[in-house]
Image (spheres, rainbow, N blue to C red):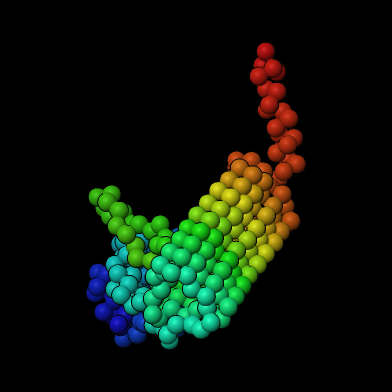
Length: 317
C-alpha cells in the first residue's frame, strides 16, 4: 500500500511522500527500503535518523533533533496503531515452500505441513507438529511432542527436546484508552542456527517483526523462556528455568545459570556470567564480568555487601 493509504487507515498525519510504497513491517534496527517501522521507545531514537525504512510511525508530539529520511506518519497512539498495522499483514504469514525433504526419518503420528522442508538425515519422533514454511536442516533430532510454528528456520545439527515450542506468539498487547488490552499480531519467526540445542519444555517466541535469533552453538536447558525479538550470541549456555524478556541481546560465550531473569531491551556483553537466581535489570556493557544478586551487580561487590547485611540483625542488638 502507499504511505497515504496507510496514514488514512491509521488515522495519522503524513509528512513526506504520500505515494511511497510500503511492502512489509520491519524492526527499525534492520529496516530496508519498502519497510514500515515504528518509533515509540526513546531507547531507539538513535536508529530513526539513519533508517532505510520507507515509512516511520512516530508519536504526534515527537520533535526530531535532525532530519529523518523516511516518510513520517504522526499518530496519537503508536503502539495501538502497530496492532492495526500488523493485522493487515498477518494473512501474509503463511510462508510458501517447495515440498517435503528427503531421506528424513519420520515416526508416526506427526503433523507436518506440506510446505515444510526437512533436510537429509534429520530424525523426527512421534507427535511432532511442524507448521507451514518451516525449514529444518540436516542431521537434526526433533524429539516427541515438539511444536514448530509456521515460518521458523532450524539449522543443521540442532536438537530440540520433548515438548519444546519454537515460534509461539510473543507476549505483545497494547492497551486502548479504556485500559483494554488488544493483541499485537506477531509476524516474525524464530531462527535457530546450526548446532543449537533446546531443552524440554522450553519456549522460544517468534518476533513481532524480523526474527528471534539463537546463534550457532547455543545450548538452552529445560523450562526456559526466550521472548520475542531476543538475540542470543554464539556458544552461550542457559540453565533451567531462566528467562529473557523481549528485545534483549545476549553476547557470545555467556553463562546464564539457573533461575536467572533478564529484563527486556537490554544488551549483555560477551563472556558475561550470571549466577543462579540473579535478576539483571540494566545493560551489561563491560565483557567478562561475573554478576550476582537482585538487582545483579559485580560478584565480589555483592559478596562484600552480603558479609555486612547478613550480620545486620546482630549489629542492631
